[in-house]
Image (tube, rainbow, N blue to C red; front, side):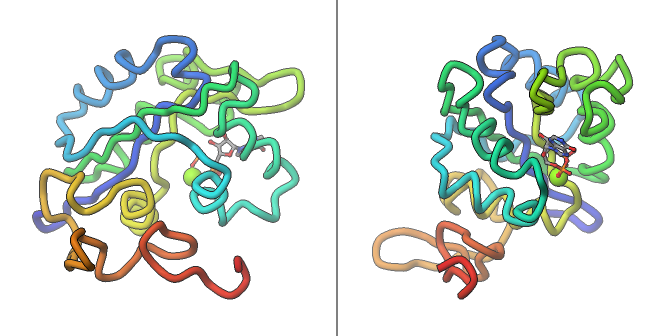
Amino acid sequence: MKNMEESILVIVKPDGMVKGLAGYVLTRFEATGLRMVAARMAKVTRELAEAHYHHLREKPFYEELIRFIMGEFDNNQDNVLAFAFVGESAVKKARAIAGATNPEEADYRTIRGSLGRVTTKGIFENVVHVSSDPIEGEREIKLWFWPEELTVELFPSKLAGNRKVWVEPGGPKTRTGPWPEEYK
Ligand code: IDP
Ligand code: MG
């Protein structure tokens, strides 16, 4: 990763997957000029969902958010497409095309503004996840990908047994690191 470059996680959420928007979302992100360094289909278990959204666990919409990202409101679509992108101002560029969190408030030219919706139950079906900042980007990439799934050495990794793991796991509930007491 060059100086000033940021790395981010992008996910096509279950609503985007069931609507057949994975290819479209990728096309929009490719147009940013950011470099794709990882891509995989991921099964969203409750464990992964809770780790990913751990910082929102006090929010009133938390439980529904977990169920949403696990595909429970989208025909049990618990497989999502996850990407890692790298580039200058990656967060700003990616969030600009994703649009505001609430699809009803998002600019209509953005992915969320043109293709998202708020359900009658108040769930934001907003098609994509994009990391909020570079620190979150690192944490999330480490959570969703093993080191060998990346095409570049974004973050230091080491050999543990016969597979590589992140030297510094990306925060609470990563797949590779210790879980903080509060989550055990
Ligand atoms: P972001 O996805 O734009 O970064 P966050 O605040 O990190 O927004 O929230 C994560 C996800 O939680 C959102 O994408 C959306 O799916 C859901 N969410 C956030 N705020 C609300 C809300 O007020 N009502 C319902 N769902 C919400
Ligand atoms: Mg966020």
